[in-house]
Image (cartoon, rainbow, N blue to C red; front, top):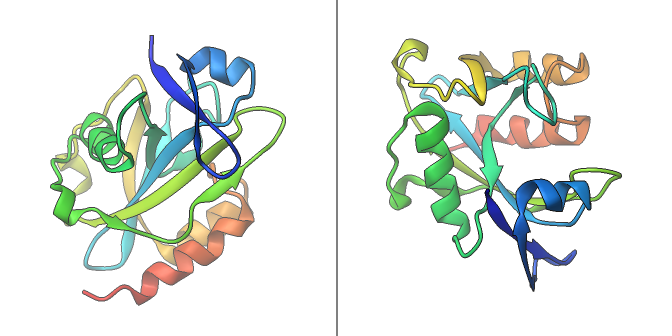
Length: 171
């Protein structure tokens, strides 16, 4: 059982804590983190979600996940990076990126807080969490934008600007 905290539309905790699946079944708003892993070539590491995922199976997405109950956003981001791709990152290497994104829809409503980290590992050096992912791959930003438009990712078209802005990161 994975416990998460329920939040309001402003991201304030409501005091409710429940199992992640129950929160999804009831479509209650909760916090998530998304981490852009970027290399010196300005490529972004995307991961192909497992076929057995409840949301966006077999689609490419960021390293991302739920914020566990009583966990900080940063702790969740560091945990997800370690669990999903085996990357040890310090809190100093974790850089907040962009605005939080509030997603309210018929299912899986959530607030996502974004970060980025720099990494130059090769694809085969990542240790992937096979229950969650089938593979990881570096993509250039133009490829990702095309994949978004073709519906091959978990991203909506409003996320294109976030990817474009990554081109301007200072080294």
